[in-house]
Amino acid sequence: MDAAERLSRPGALRWRAPEGDIPTLDWQGQSLDCSGCRYHALRGRPEPEGCEPGHSCMHDAYARRIDRFFRHHRELAREQLGHPYFEVRAIAARYADPFQLPALLNDPDETVRLQVALRVPQRLLRAMVGDPHREVRIRVAQRIDSDQLSRLVADEDYEVRATVARRLPVALLSLLVNDADLQVRCAVARRLEMPVLWRMACDPAAEVRCLVAERLPPALLAPLLGDAEWRVRWEAAGRAPAELVAQLQRLCRDDDDAEVRLRARERLAELGQPLTPPLACADS
Image (cartoon, rainbow, N blue to C red; front, side, top):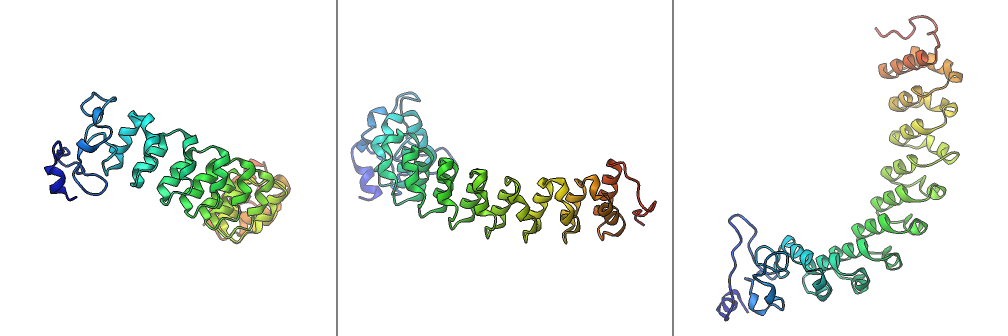
């Protein structure tokens, strides 16, 4: 039935959105027809009890209007979990009882499954670790019990693995020390503890080695004071202990980077150590 035929039906009305607003059409691009709606009796009631085309309507193509309808009529959400329009299913899943959502675990649309992943209990969430869409698996990684996170350690998507790295029990973080993605290894370096943290002092990425220099026990910073990256040397110089004074003196005198030489000078002053020889690190 085309729009003209729909408008010719008794009770069919073409509702217009306010000037400049998104047009008031149903999800198939047709004019809204309240006469055939099972919730027609709600129309005209004051908000939040009622509904109104162009403002609060589950048949509208515009997600915000669908959301406004179910937000005020949560008890109706379960009736629309099988609606043919994915936005209706997704928004209904946001408001329906979580125990009514198992039928949507394998919904063909990832927007729907994402809403399911945000709300289902852990028993059902575990069934979604292999979801084909990355955004769904990211939500799973954010919510799943920590003792289940190891199932996502080898996920093909770096953001899933990075989420895992931010939540994985520290004892299991070594599984991601050699991850191919920089973001993942940075997340690991921010949480990893000794002695495994020491392994990351040789990471190929300067960003990771900088994080290691921030967290490594000071007595172990000697190798990083000679790192090829100036940012790593700068971080290490700022935490070097008294037993590494000789290396600080060399940095102060010989380092190629002025910021590193200055940081070494400041650290020597913090440690109460004189410059050797005097004025050796003055930059000219």
